[in-house]
Length: 242
Image (cartoon, rainbow, N blue to C red):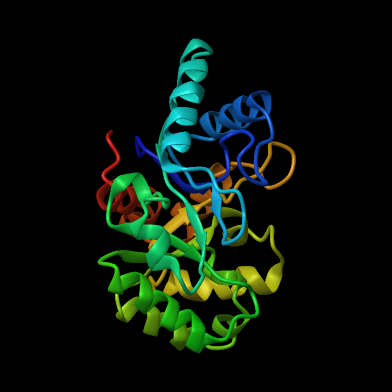
């Protein structure tokens, strides 16, 4: 495993704006873990939920600058980029048009989640809604959706319509249980997964640990595919500076 980069493209590392890090101290501890396990780039993806007090794109960018400055002082070399994780809602277009939503590093890619028990028809319609805005949907933590776990063909259907598919690093290595690991393994064997992120919220539980996942992927799968889902795709799609 000799790659130079490792991208965590789904994490809740910015302090005090969602249910992730609640303080700068926690954020810095999370960043240390990320750097120690080889992560070089992160996309901060605070939650955006209808009816909640969501951080504006300006707030997200300001916090990234603040965190990045403190990290530099402490010699933590991880680059952070702006994003959101959108809990899909029907009037998404209104929020997008009002510039309240942050795409992945200002690109045309948008990270979207649904409730775990959402039926497939709504997931598909949600992705079509995102595409109608001129955006490319990225489905967050594919392994959480019960409808998709029942039929891998439905995940392929989403991918065929232009969705990118993300899985959490802990799900790859078995941290979310054997059945979840087996489902994700099927997706990996069929090269359906496009991106890996930690979905980190803290430094003790749900940590920004990518290293074990990377080690597993390079051991079990084609090196080029591991490169793509660990860093190449994220750098290319989200325009991350190297």
